[in-house]
Image (cartoon, rainbow, N blue to C red; front, side, top):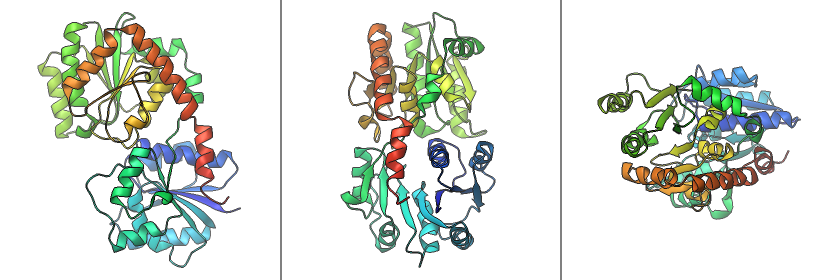
Length: 368
């Protein structure tokens, strides 16, 4: 049987990388041989190893890295790879040259980024994107951004959203929720507001902290938990932590760093917030919906295609602490409304973003 390859040469470990890993696992469960290409000595390589998935590490190189071109071409031939999902479109710069003359290999581009105000319709980009059988976009909004910036036609792009393994959320219990809340000192009568994502200016944690400072004055029984990688020594990490200290929030703001069991931490929350400046999709938002949490998000990137109206979540403008404050008030002032929104959000997540149904759409893009 032909092998399916997943290319994701990234040093990080976030939604993009974990989504490619999830697809690999689904192909494997389906009995389809699969192989991952990742960056050598990266967090993602460690994650693939931990998951017991077959992979080959590549060097971190420039776009036209000759060693990666040669090693990738050799692997394609050796492992009889006939179908390739490129999860980071920058990797097309070595994937496409490596496939010269190998016309029977199908290539699917997975667009996980949101493009604005760039023009990539020059000769070289036309050659790269012309090699793709299809490009996956995550939302209709993102599809339009790709059409504006890349040398693609509407029929070249298929909208397939990211997905969530709902089985993880079905196994959540009240005991797990209570244990996690107790472990960080959150009482039964306190509302725990949470954000998940690496500490980064584009993730909007600073604006959320500004909003929380004012929220806590009106709702003193609230706490904020920030889950995600902290870049040691970064100016942003320093800025965020200094704000907490300077505003006497050290007893109210909890930093938990990177957590493997994000779905369990979702269950511990009362309100989930995604304050990003821009998101092509935002898988953590769908995970919070699946956990049955009232969600507040900025209307950045493709998010309005997920939270379509106030019945399943609240959208506010990005880059605004005041907007986030108003959004949190919208929930905290009417907890019955918040509870109904969480019920609707969970139903939407299970109906639209279930991993099993999304996987079939992804698999059907290739001729297996």
